[in-house]
Length: 85
Length: 138
Image 1: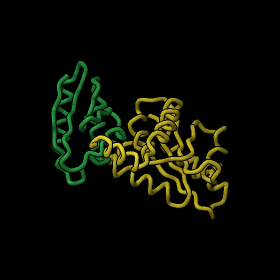
Image 2 (image 1 turned 60 degrees about the vertical axis):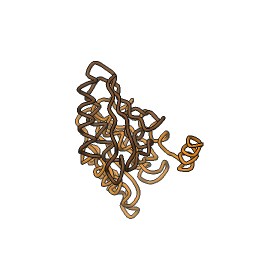
Image 3 (image 1 turned 135 degrees about the vertical axis):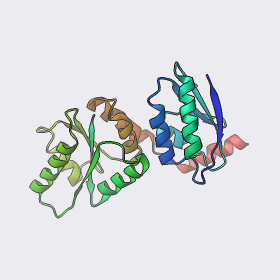
Image 4 (image 1 turned 90 degrees about the vertical axis):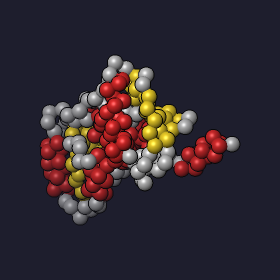
């Protein structure tokens, strides 16, 4: 179950466009995807769940992937967020 | 892929579509049809028919309207015997965003049920979040 931490650098935070893009990147993988902010952990394949994290600028997110393609999934998602967020 | 038609009063359908495209980067097979209150019923029905046909690739179409019992909903419902679509009345943006994610992986019936539930589940009170945040800090 690989994990990665990422700080939200975008001044608008993890907003709807970025959240949607994240789920589009993630849905091609078999692995479960979880995104956490503090104690809140949500389904990373669902847009609204991501938005309910309220991850604004400076928030620390943890991405976790679980499944047979977990490593590839995590790499893709981290790259996406680094670029978008 | 299940196509989606947004049908609502005034400019609401078009504005929802614009907001959706902004968020999704234009992904999805979604169109909008505006039914002005001045429009004649026969013409309105034809506009809806054309919209449904424009997004139907054989997998069926989900029509989402703004208000059950409003003219857009009534006009759409009048076409249900003649075209293959399901209708949800009470569209919101979470529902539309999710529809883009589901339309290539769900059949029409299950997509309609999932989106009805999703639209309802994703209405929030800001004060609930603020309270949760405050409880977490204390």
